[in-house]
Length: 362
Figure 1: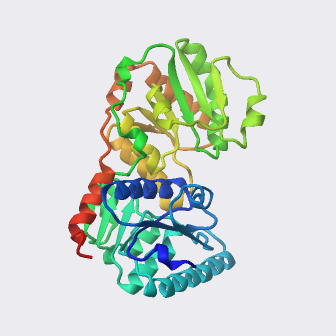
Figure 2 (figure 1 turned 180 degrees about the vertical axis):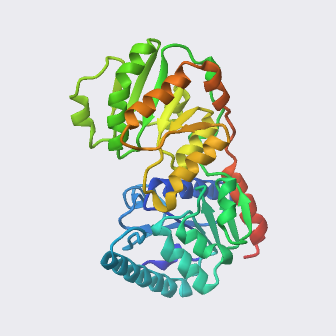
Figure 3 (figure 1 turned 90 degrees about the vertical axis):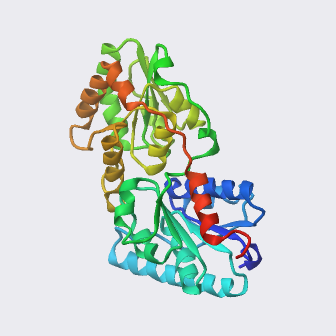
């Protein structure tokens, strides 16, 4: 391993999924623009970061680690062995080429770097986007120099660690003013997001609900991100003429701005983007997400008056149709859920890092 990329660097680690990796990228971009200090990444060779870091230009190291939660006994043992090996390798590397500090944004890809930092006494910071903290963050929070929470509800599970409610960092495209909901004109758009990989239950539910919705509301259309895998089969199926499909949607800031209502899962990054754009949503939490964090996120959004929650079940299509109908028929109800709020998470996190580390001394 080439350790020189780490000497004196601010190391960002987090991944496995986009919900962990993209906040790390947003923080790294902010740090690069703010300070004259090298930045490097540590991630997992199987995570989303393995696809995106090689072309990004960021110095990085990818390690052979896997997730632990929800696996069989044999796979858990293998994952723990790989984690121990990766931790030891980083300790050897960082004894010689010591980072300045480590920032972890969660996910199994962050575990080796955070555990190595703790073993070597390297200051580390944690960002927890979800309303219900993940296992790794809960285990390491007490020894962290700081814990940055995406939602106020997340601070309650940190065991007395020093927490700052900072919000969840979003991409630079969301740092702008968005068209208010009341400025939209027909055809109003129902935007359906099952995630970049698609969501079978949501896809099927929308195909069930869409005909009745579009017949009742002739001044609405549906733009439905199916995911690349399901797209060929779904695009061949009969559907209403105003039910439009796409395998994947680029420029999500623009897609959200054009939407009058969004049906979506409730990952933390999605929640943060909806808050930044001020768009109302019907959230369908992913069942079985680690620690039930997606339902906790959705409930937090609902409690804040920004979303309605529909739990996934056998009658999901009918439940979605009923909830969407209530909102689409009630402009005032939609408007009450639409309160844009500028995202200051990157600045808040980096301000805290600078204050705690006394920038320029370490």
